[in-house]
Image 1 (cartoon, rainbow, N blue to C red):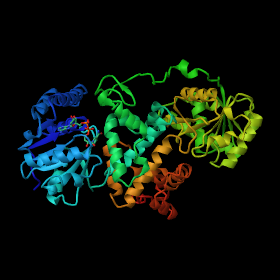
Image 2 (cartoon, helix red, strand yellow):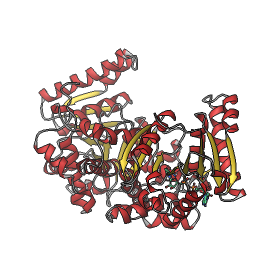
Image 3 (cartoon, rainbow, N blue to C red):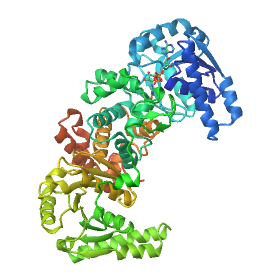
Image 4 (tube, rainbow, N blue to C red):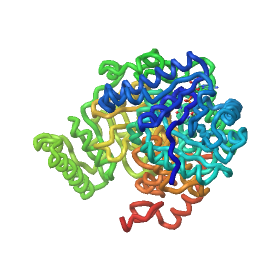
Amino acid sequence: MAREFTSVGVVGLGTMGAGIVEVFARNGIDVVAVEISEGALERGRANLTGSTDRAVAKGKLAAADRDALLGRITFAVGLDALHSVDLVVEAVPEHLDLKQRIFAELDRVCKPDAILATNTSSLSVTEISVATTRPNQVIGIHFFNPAPVMKLVEVVRTVVTSADVVADVEALCARLGKVDVTINDRAGFIANALLFGYLNHAVAMFEARYASREDIDAAMKLGCGLPMGPLALMDLIGVDTAYEILDTMYRRGGRDRRHAPVPLIKQMVTAGLLGRKSGRGFYTYERPGSPVVVPDEATPVTTEAALADGARAITKVGVVGSGTMATGIIEVFAKAGYEVVSVTRGAEKSATVCEAVKTSLNKGVVRGRLSEEDRDAALGRVTWSAALDHLADVDVVVEAVVEELSVKKALFASLDEICKPGVVLATTTSSLPVIDVAMATQRPADVVGLHFFNPAPIMPLVEVVRTIRTSPETTATARALCATLGKTAVVCGDRSGFIVNALLFPYLNDAVKMLEASYSTADDIDHAMKLGCGYPMGPFELLDVVGLDVSLAIQRELYLELREPGFAPAPLLEHLVTAGYLGRKTGRGFRDHTHR
Ligand SMILES: NC(=O)c1ccc[n+]([C@@H]2O[C@H](COP(=O)([O-])OP(=O)(O)OC[C@H]3O[C@@H](n4cnc5c(N)ncnc54)[C@H](O)[C@@H]3O)[C@@H](O)[C@H]2O)c1
């Protein structure tokens, strides 16, 4: 029989603590909520009522249930109020000495059989536990932000945590409607160990002006389906908390440079830019604690007029190539009303591409997304050709041929001879340096990357890659063009992986390394990222879909360009590729897909 918890205590009512109080009280458990001062207690109470009032306003909680929920909570200053609770969850700032002091005090105040839990994200639960005389009753219960919403709880057992305590806490998580993964005491556990390298990398991109905050966030939301971008997430977590977590992970996690906090983070903490809780972080919020972003001096102007500023007029588009991407891009342009010249290497290929575009457009008609007239009009706008000479009068060329530098360079040299002056020459490469392609022409200022995502007609994102030679007009034209296609364009520099792949693949590679180290299972890691961070797919699900060979190739490129030791491809990934386990396409990757 699992132990019954009738009353619990929560210490610290900040970003996490207030949410944790709400989780317990919502599930009929009495809570003693403790803060350090009257002022902090008031702020904690306001955090809590703000959250429950929003839930009522959204129709997710009845007003009577909110009142009952609030009725279960006793607010108090000081730890003495916790003398008779069965369990305490500590959620004070991420400092080891502070947590150790609190645990020593809790050990003195609480009943002998009370379980003492920490919500730490990165500190050693073991080190916290030895500040008490009952380390076998100390455990990590790591909730995710926002605690009332995120389903995951990481239960962290140390080498001394008793098995009964682990089982009781697991049963409690189930009662709270949470899904738990139980793991050993290691810096960052599952989710943060995979998340924080990515967040730090995103801040480094922003700090280096590689892309704007809005573009970095939009890229990850639209390119990967994440619930929020990394910089918005830093603001939600709290920039100070994120700093402490990174710093601890760096020191505890093998001094991986990717966890050494980017200098900007420390500067923001010093300047009081802590994120949502202080009203300003990477973004500016309506007021402290509010989730509503308001424009500030860094907010870009995105009106149609501003987008068109400096952009050249485009009516006719050339698309070179006959693969999946070229086919999708032809469809996108034709549907948006552009005249399109499709150039392939022969009449047969042109016929195949034409068929593929027709099939895709027909699907749109069957699904009621496109009328028959619009389909016919779109097809009528496309000219099918096997000669580059037909690109003599287009306004922009989008190249989507095979991913080989020599082939692309030769093509761009030809385009340079054929196309009229002022034409934007775009490459859809996902891994080659755009500048190499640009320098094959006499007009590198007119060359830009237009990285569409697959399937192009569906994915809303395009990365506009400007090289050190790309002119502002060319970038403006590419941006404006994407807007007319109904796509969101994000502008970034010419580095391996652009924004999305550079941030995504190291995280996937880290997940493989975590599996390889036997820290957790593929299922638990997938669960952790989906339920703890709201990712649409776990890393192993995604690797199997993308293809392990493709993932390995991208990771190798990133490693070769940046020589970052942490980017070295996981040996397990290499072995699976060598063994021919490439993911869904071969029936087996990290999982066996043949029997599903
Ligand atoms: N922010 C996140 O997304 C997140 C997610 C999971 C876990 N965590 C972890 O949760 C813990 C709390 O983080 P947070 O982001 O909620 O911090 P926070 O700064 O928002 O809140 C901390 C609260 O603790 C209070 N406090 C400080 N000293 C105290 C004391 N001696 N007694 C009682 N209360 C005290 C502060 O007044 C403040 O309200 C940290 O260990 C953090 O790593 C954070």
